[in-house]
Amino acid sequence: MPPYQLYKTFREKSMKTKLISALILFSSVVYLSSCSKRSATTGWGYNDPRWGGFEDHEYPGQETGPGLVLVEGGTFVMGTKEQDVEWKYDNLERRVTVNSFYMDQTEISNKQYREYLYWLLRVFPDYDVYNQALPDTLVWRSKLAFNEPYVEYYLRHPAYKDYPVVGVNWLQATDFAAWRTDRVNTMILDREGIMIYDPVQELEENNFNTASYLSGLYDIPKLGKKKYQPRDYSQKKKATRRVKVEDGILLPEYRLPTEAEWEFAAKALIGNSVNENVEQDKIYPWNDLTVRWARGSTERERGLMLANFKRGRGDQAGIASKLNDAGFITTPVYSYWPNDYGLYNMAGNVSEWVMDVYRPLNWEDFDDFNPFRGNVFKTVLLDEYGDPEEKDSLGRLKYRLVSIEENVNRRNYKKADNIGYKDEETYMGGDQIYEYGTTSLVNNKARIYKGASWNDRAYWMAPGTRRFLDEELALSTLGFRCAMIRVGSPVGNNPKANKHLPSTGSKKKR
Image (cartoon, rainbow, N blue to C red; front, side, top):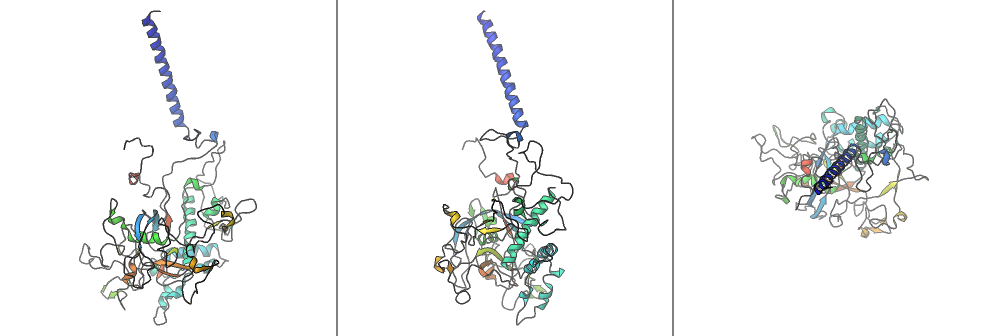
């Protein structure tokens, strides 16, 4: 065969081979794109019963729960910026970092708390749960003042429905947050068509608890046809399953904020930041050194108080016809101007409970990331088969303290109760030696509360100030708001907000 014919034959075979290769490649791409995503580890398909059914779904990001706003975390100097007028020196300045989290835009109002009481009375009519949750309305009484109208009307009268709830102790506030977690997750499951909410609930049968549901101890009542059930890809035939943590549908728990979170949110330095510099620090949750509005657009606004506090002795609200803050006691939770995170009344109105246990040396003994004192580590109580035990009378999982024996090989902690960690000088053989009520009011039940109230001077409006109270006590000046951890991206779900993060798999040269 002549050389040119040999070349022509070779060229035709080569083109045919390339065409076949291209068709094979195209077919492979079409096949891979048409079926489930594949593992970069094994090449197995995700969301495919043929490959075992391991699931990997798109996750749009954490949903913002009802009442919450995102507080983008970061580093800040925690501690008092004011003179220590009490000479306690219990909150000296130190630099810490707080993870991003969510916080209630306002204090919990009487209306919100009464919704909680209504639910308890409806679901637990034969239990003392309702009575235990009632705020102490007698906190309004004073031996030398006529405050009986507040005792009678403040909690329940519609005139005060949007005012912050008071008379709630730390334990009650914590229980409210736990209840709220379950009710919000119930709403989400109902909204997604996974369950249909039953307003006529019965104890232990329809009382939804998030942890019990995720552990398999709560069965969704069959109340009609469900709109949607998650697909169980481990079964070749189409089957459904209950929601799992991996689905990202249910929200993390509502809770009280830590002291560091509360102080960080109150200062709201995000409004004073340019690139990585804080251009101006703050004494109060707003800029300037005064407690009056200096930049009002009208003469009527200029000079108004920026918070509800006590201006001076015998001056709760100012002079008639020109009240300086219009707050003889509390004011509605949406009063005054919000700070740069959009949070209302982070100074004034009512002081607020936080999670931490009080120690005078909290500023010395701390982690510089998410500092908190009060950890008591627990684990779910299991039966003899290694499954969670039955629920308690409130429909919740039963927990126990972790033991030292099961943590022998653990380095980060050994025992359950770490409230007194690095506080050995106050303990003797594990027993606290404070003479509580005699020489000190500090013990493991002393909880911190932050911020000023309607009956406090401007000094306490500085976010760095701190006080403490026994967790079983309540005040007419003390309320609370809830927080929730932000999981995933610290800057929210908006892709534009994540532009500063390193691009995954980016081939761009740097």
